[in-house]
Length: 243
Ligand code: ATP
Ligand code: MG
Image (cartoon, rainbow, N blue to C red; front, side, top):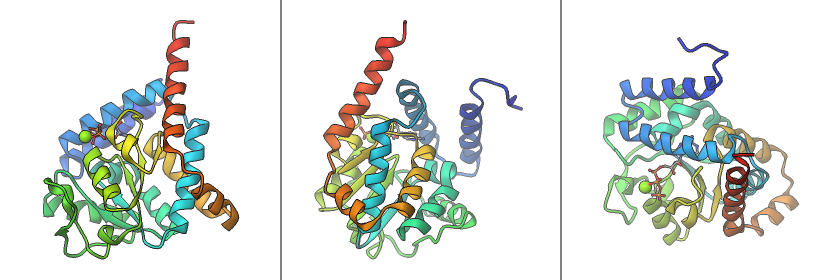
């Protein structure tokens, strides 16, 4: 039992949730360590949505609603932490939701798809093929899903698939708390924010942006600026840590 007045209540509840999802196989043990890296960077950024992340979230919304064939790629951690938020974003953006895993088994894919459906997602499933130019299991996707996408949202991505998707000519939106990761550096647009803070912001922006705002935002993507702003925020916090 985690007491509600514990100063790290939210973080402890999230850890517990992820640990429980390892028991059903939705989250991999490796996924737990990836979460730990995320938590460390969240500490450094102050566990809040920065102004530059908010801008990135609005640009992400504009990219998704202006896309021809937008896809949200979901892995185990994302499904465990944010299945309902993914459903809300799908509704607001019209994007396809497709499961894509590094530690892939058919059984795990089915479990994650079921969790997403139970939380209101319309999941694009069916026969997967090894279509992405990668030597590991994230190569598996669906021809009419991710393979045909023009814009892909990849929360908690690994760097090589992000690079592969960009090389295929797709616009890739990453959500990753680590501004130094290969994912962050190779994505078209990186949101340096925690997944469950970022998703509702993107959903809200999908509902409120006008066509003109969308045009302006999609024309203004500058990932280098967004990453350098995140690093500046971290630096500022480090410099003031001992004040
Ligand atoms: P790369 O291969 O891109 O250099 P990596 O090896 O760190 O990066 P993974 O091990 O796949 O990539 O880790 C996933 C990333 O997701 C980590 O960088 C971590 O910071 C980030 N992350 C984990 N949990 C969250 C979360 N809840 N919200 C946002 N980002 C997260
Ligand atoms: Mg990696």
